[in-house]
Amino acid sequence: DSLIKYANDSIFLPMIDNNHWTVMCFNMIDRRIDVLDSMGAKKSKRSKLNDENMRQKVIGRFLDVLDRIYPNEFTPVRNWKCHLALIPQQVLENDCGFFAMKYIQFWDGRKLVKKVVPKD
Image 1 (cartoon, rainbow, N blue to C red):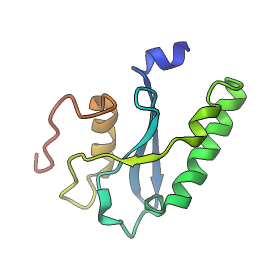
Image 2 (image 1 turned 60 degrees about the vertical axis):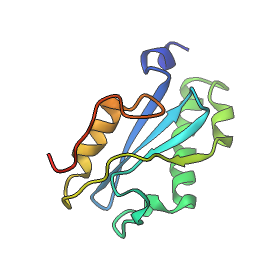
Image 3 (image 1 turned 90 degrees about the horizontal axis):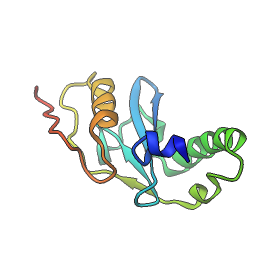
Image 4 (image 1 turned 30 degrees about the vertical axis):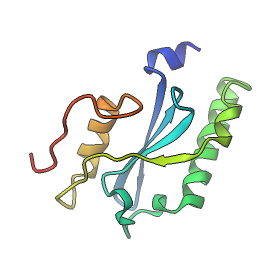
């Protein structure tokens, strides 16, 4: 319970796959998993995380860890759907890490609370 409160009703999981950073946000407000990806729906060739099966595998492994630390607290999360968030997309090829950190900093579960401008 305290973990969720301190995390502002969200748990962020930054992940890297083939040099591409993506963030999974376990959104306790809307009971879904927000996928914060600076490549969005472009289906980056670099990241396997664009594949729904791979996302579910990674999410399952993370939830296995949480279940060990907090038994039975995160079991319902396994049934949540993934939601690809509509967020600013990277312009330059190597900006994904910067965007991942900004998404974690400014994502409130529904939108970015501060503007992130890709060209800046």
